[in-house]
Structures are given as C-alpha cells and as structure tokens.
Length: 225
Ligand SMILES: [Fe+2]
Image (cartoon, rainbow, N blue to C red; front, side, top):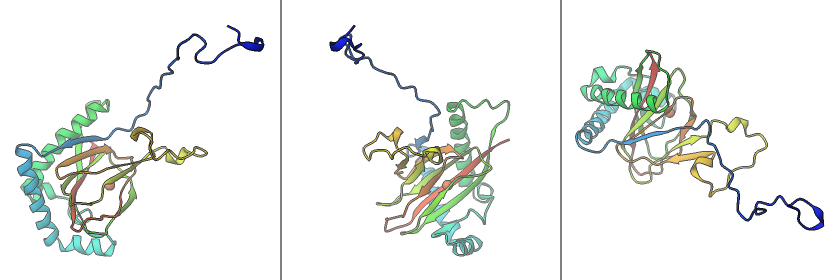
C-alpha cells in the first residue's frame, strides 16, 4: 500500500488495525510471600516474638557484637548459631521454613538432582527506631528470607534492588509512576507474620526505621545439601 508521494505507508494503521507487539518476560526476579497469621501459626508468631525478646535481653555476646559493629539494636547473627536447638519455638519455626523454602524452590524450578535445602543460619534482628541496615547480599546461600514478628507503625520496609543495576549504563532512570516490575528499586512493607523469601544473590536493604518502637524479625539462609 502506498501513501502520498509514492512512499510506502508502514504506519501501524496501514491495514486499519493496531498491531499489538508482545513483550516476553525473561529472567524474572521472584519474591515469595506468605502471611503466617492464620490458625496455629498465629500462636507460633507470638511465642517467637516473646522468645526473640528474651534472647535479645540475655545474649550478652550478641549485644556486645551489635554495639562493636554499629548494629542499631540487637542481632544474634554473630553470636548464636543454634537457635532451633536452644529454644523449641525456633525449632518449630525451622520446620515451617523448610516447607516454604522447598515450595519456593519448586516455583523456581530448580533441578535439585537429589539434593535438598538445609537451614544454614537463623538469626534475630531487633532494629531500633532510627536504625537501618545497608544494602547487602547473603553469600554462601541459595535462598534467604525474613519473617517479621513486630512491625510497628512507620517501621522500615525491605527494599530490593534490580540485580541488573550495574549493567544499566546509559539507560535513563524509570518513571516514578513505573509499574512495579519495571522499577529499579521495589520496597515491600511487611506486616507481623509476613514471610518473604528470595534468591540469596538479590541485593536488599532496610531503610531508616521511622517507627517509635523496635521492629523485630527473624532472618535465615538456606544452602544446598
Ligand atoms: Fe539481608
């Protein structure tokens, strides 16, 4: 079909219809989310919160490490590696987390080749008002995650970063109104009982905690056995 001046008309309306190009979504970053607030797990949550506070108050080595390393609050990350053995409620949590890690691995379609996920580490975080945790990844792990136990009003969300960020080079930033899947940073605001899992290479941070009270969570890593 030729338009005026003998030029070929290649506009989308040349045939009277709009041709809709398709977008194929590849290499998608997946975040697993479950709310553990119903039934028996709601009891588990309140027991975990009480146990986390108890451990935070008693763990002198963890308190000292948090202070020495400028952790704004308390973390058992460097002081306790046996929470599931130390306190039965963390053992119950580990059993719940195992099921979710396995489910996430299925969704990611990992070919496990007879291997299984093993809980590598599990630690408590008590983030004070005004505290934050800079961007990081979780080395030596396959799946990482956090279960939120206490999330006061205005508490920090968790902020994930597009893993392709170092390759953006000359690309312009995304619009403030961009769809979530097109953004470079995505924040997820948890509630008490929110469980989030992600692949351990995904960089994330905890921005400043604007709540007037502590934000309490339990984080963990899974490796392959
Ligand atoms: Fe983390």
